[in-house]
Length: 238
Image 1: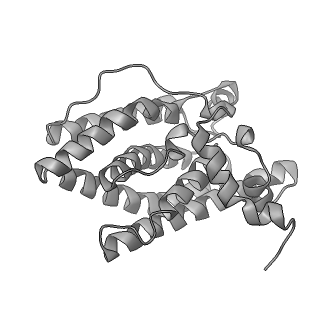
Image 2: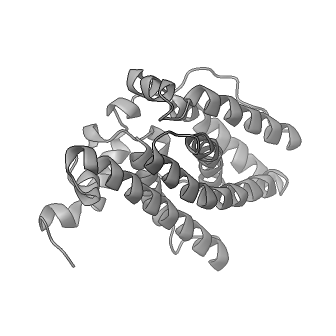
């Protein structure tokens, strides 16, 4: 789940390469995509030890129903404000998730969290800065941001969905307690929205399904593009 979130979101951000509002921001988004890809690779590599599979096999040789990423990570990119809002929501959750995983009794997971947290701290600083700039900018930038918030909000709580396996691992001190992560996420969201005089959406209905392999039509298109080379030339190596 952790690796799939980051791989798919990384692919979405990579599609912005060459399309940023200006050069420095174009490079920033591309670097964030690379960081997420690196995190996904480390988690896939560790997960692969359980099934004797490589990171490449897990990334390139599974079907869409076998992916467990949250739906928000696979949605097609919209305008810059939309991309920033999605990243802001994701970065806050990732920051608190990795902070909790630092306490993991699994030494490998804790080490991955420690390394990743350094990157995510930058990611959050970046998305938070732009979130505030857009909210406090022109009428147009604020309207685009509020439209993005309204569009994305119903996908956010899937980031904290749990299941018996996660609950069991959390009780053993291995996985993060997603209830704690959600509480901290909501606290940060409410604080930032209050500062910016933004209204937190009141709708309680949330999209779900990604964690059990039920995705939007967008994921299939991503995998068609992302997996093309490996599936056309099995076991190809540079």
